[in-house]
Length: 220
Image 1 (tube, rainbow, N blue to C red):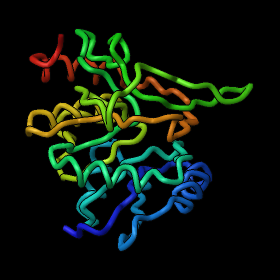
Image 2: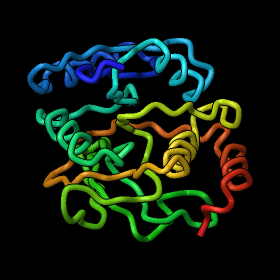
Image 3: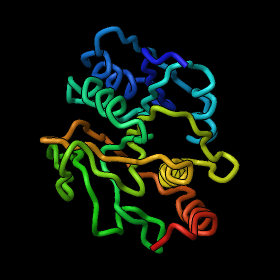
Image 4: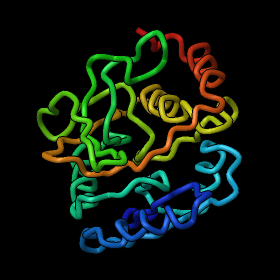
């Protein structure tokens, strides 16, 4: 593993959308001595399979798994996240929003104790999802949302369980927890990311039932 490399990983089916996201990535301040690289998977059958393939294509210690429609608007994003990972070795993964517990539905945002901040886009402009305040450097949570998941350790994504585009994030969060790592949401004065999201619920319920069956012990 190259401890001085950061890799941005995306599954892309809309090159124009990704190009806009890439412009934001290109303007981030890179910590001194670090290098960045970009891996794009354009023919992924699922996010889990695409992320696994991309993970094998890079030797970067730090990986940013980011949706093609997410724009990182905090120029110090890499400075902040690398500082957290280096200061807290047990912190395996960071996300921009997440939940302290997982409710019986398996849907993290059904949990009242949610943390983090994210900008969203609707026809009349930006709106802010502003959950509970994070005290300290970060809040340890059970799961984070998949719009952006940054790791400092490699664990395989469960493509044996999850096809498609849903609940891969909850699954990977729990895999990190089972491996003994913390999953966290950083303290943000204002949101670090904009999510220009169009919802697609194809396969949602199927994957939700898989999650509930396989990770039942984690459900509140």
